[in-house]
Image (tube, rainbow, N blue to C red; front, side):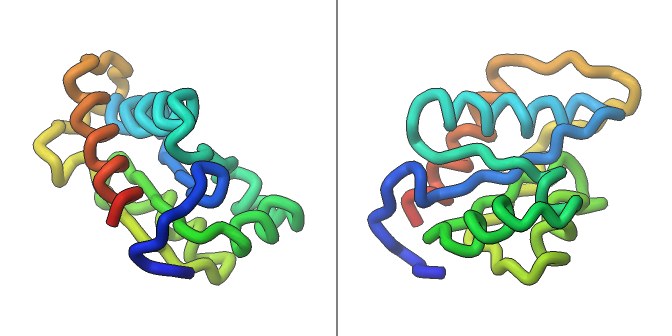
Length: 126
């Protein structure tokens, strides 16, 4: 995959943890969703990679830039992308950005989402 490319939003894919068990997964998912709605990249189906869906894998391999956002250091999203042999161009772990994981709680702030969105945008422009 090309580094430092000037890519169209559809050529930039974001795979986000949606962590059903904690707030940081929800932050990851919401930030990726907002980036997609703003037309800056395309959020893609992480479960499709894990399920080995050929169309999703092929589309991901054709992307010019892959950004992965994990909620915590367990790194589920990163491992799923790597499992199908795809290189990652940008990687963010939310708990490493000063946002504490609260298992069993799903509340998050706009400020937290904004912080992660800014990091995704930075990875898009690198």
